[in-house]
Image (cartoon, rainbow, N blue to C red; front, side, top):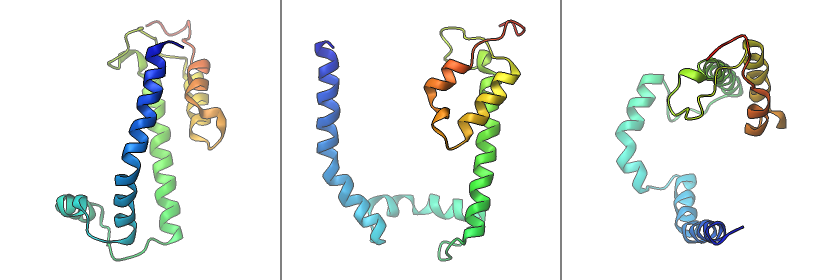
Length: 137
């Protein structure tokens, strides 16, 4: 590792140590329900989002509502990941010009990436999502 690599490590550790105290104080205020800077500034935005999604901020979310929200989010993530993989060749910021993978590869990749197992890591996504010779770029 060169000097630049060590410099990045030192910078990351220093930034973490410097920000730990103020972020800890902020999190303590948020979790205790006390007033904080973001609450006063973002209160109108929060109110609009609550009204849009029909959320009552004073009401606790039950386990059934939580489970349904989790399943809806998981299903939406499932679909979005599949679409990202299928239209990979058309997306911006593709400097290597990676072609889209085979549909079967996309299905199996999105299935494993959506499961709570270690097989859905970014490394395994790159390894498994090889371009198919049937689908030209």
